[in-house]
Length: 401
Length: 174
Image (cartoon, rainbow over all chains, first blue to last red; front, side, top):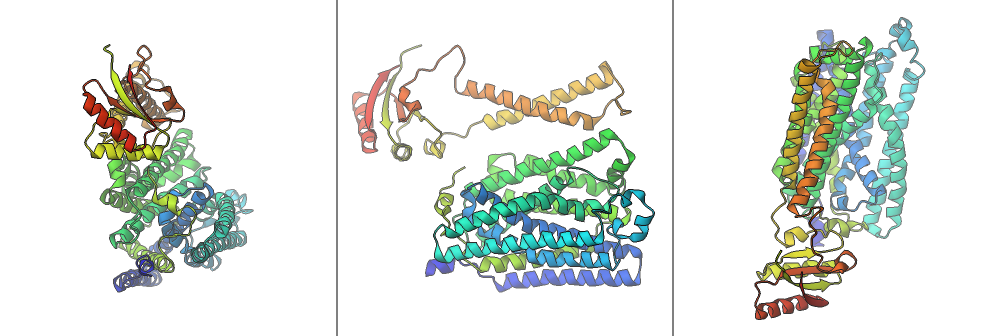
């Protein structure tokens, strides 16, 4: 009985207050933004919508990474991650909330409250032959239908997976393991398609004329790096509260390798996209980088430094991947860096280079952060932190890199 | 090369071997080498080996390779044989990056292979003696250098091996 209690995460009142305070900051920022948008300049309307979209997508990415992490490891018969499996599992439980938070973007598109998507404006489409050629895919009805399909499938599979996981905790046996295996296979196939099409829909279609064939992977990699950084931070936080005693430096080492490797791969895709456009030197393509390098030069270069140069050198040694302080610092940096990446994918195209990053965006992000933390903590508190009935639990304890 | 004497114990199981290594090290006896058919997790720590410098060598080789290649390409494209490609400047850094990346990987990889052979004393012309060919099949071996051991010490080590689960204990001149 005692052991069960120690293995149960209990949300302290301090954590609850912190989450609510963060949500409060976010709501306050949003209110200020909306008031400024109605009273003042058109820039503020753009600022609010851009920050909403960037945050909705970024935190959706953390939840999707949680889901992708457990399903891909399950499919590959991975055993080592089981000891901290509840953490990505809890992150995946944010998906329903992420779906709700994408709704304003869809509703705003129908009511023409925002101009994030140029193709959603019938007048612009009427005068633009290039966009007319894309209306078969990029039209409000199909866009909404895709939103329903994406989130419907993701949420359904995340909830089913979670249910099987919790049932397994009660009853044991391999029945639920096999069930999860089935859900994992379905999710992986679904996600292989939707991770790319989602990136086209919500991000690439902002710069409607422009396109890049590796954009989907690029966005997916940004999701993955940010998600693993978030996972490391949640695990280390739980460890600092003396939960998850079985997670040791071997598990952290492997997570650190993921962080290092996927950061490098993100850079590989970033540069591949950049170099082909630079080499081809076609105006329709180079405009994407031109607007970012000319109007957002600091963010543009700063993002590459903190997303590649710093983690590349800082995480290179074995010790840096195994020690908590270095991992935490790099994870925070990467989380922020990839948030900036999303902001830079959206802001220049959606506002004709007018909207810039400031305190308002930070405030709104704090709100999303608080909400994300609250959902994850609640999901963590729902079940034992160690999935002891998982067939691979023992293997996970013995993990050695 | 002078003849070397070794004393070695043969084990049937990798877990037994790992425990034996830990126990023997705990009693302060120096193990010369362990031979196993496959890598055993945790054996480095158990033998108290100092961490390998192979990674550092890889980093240094990569750094040297990338620097030299950068200088070489810059020299070719700006001084030695400048050509205009697609209207780009002679010194076009983005075009260098794929090659710099490949050369970093290549020089680090080749350098690490060479360092690996040097560190292990392996080369095509010098062959290391094999203590027991079964260590590449299904047996696990702990070997001690027996040149400077007295008869009592040998006896003690043999007992130790035996207590820790060795199935046979042999002495061999290489």
